[in-house]
Length: 126
Image (cartoon, rainbow, N blue to C red; front, side, top):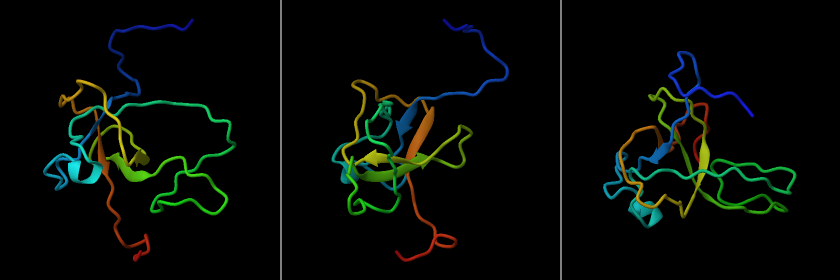
């Protein structure tokens, strides 16, 4: 059993819940045009699962696997906004994303945005 103190700690890493933020990027209907439903301000559910497979890799910019690989799911590359203080990484959001029931509330923990490619050190096209 571990030690736990729920008082405010001065020096800690913070964990925030995440919300879909697909209403501020030109998606006037909260992402419904892309995902088939409005996702704006919904909480991003989370699961960490064990797989019997040896390795899993997310490949940005592809929607198909290499020959001999198995597609687990495909979707859109999302991440937190660079201007936010909380840590972020890129994630592959399933093309049919889930939400929590009754969770539409603007808490602004970690906000997930679709990513946008910028040419430069990233070769364009494609």
